[in-house]
Length: 189
Image 1 (cartoon, rainbow, N blue to C red):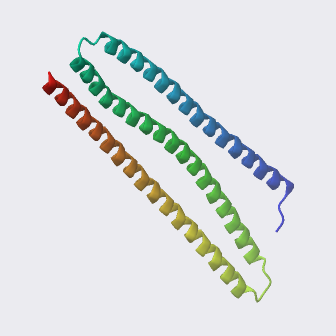
Image 2 (cartoon, helix red, strand yellow; image 1 turned 60 degrees about the vertical axis):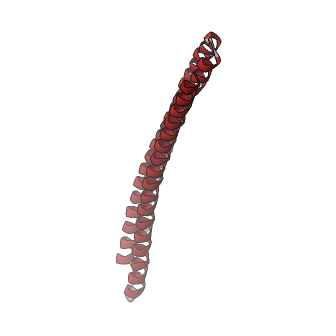
Image 3 (tube, rainbow, N blue to C red; image 1 turned 45 degrees about the vertical axis):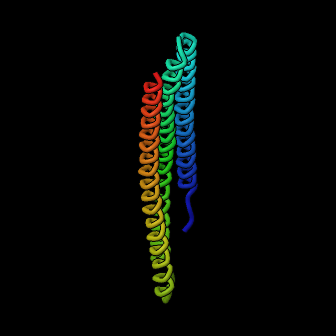
């Protein structure tokens, strides 16, 4: 079976549309990343300026220690928030890419299966066994591909759960450290 020029042109148009769609998604992710970094940098600069002003206004060492201790928790929380936003951006871009690739793979799989069915119908007499073996191999390959897709999805879900657990653990550790430092500073007074 040969492809008509119209089919080739339609396939090329679809490929070009997919390419530009993926490129646009990549730029959207990049824009979000730049926006996140600009926002985080601006907030860090403002926080640093406020902290320097507070340190310069400190009247005694205990107040200075309390300021330093009070800086730890918000810094850790902001770091965790930044990491979560970064993860969300990367995860969202990955999800979009994955959806597009899955859609393209499914379309290619359908087209290939149609091609195999057409070839099987037009096969010479006596080749039924060969056609059946070939169809079985294609089916096994399709099943293996679906299994890999499911495994990748499960791995992504586990990675996300682990990331959230680590982020929560870091936030709790920062809160504990800040509380301990604040209590130690208060005892020194």
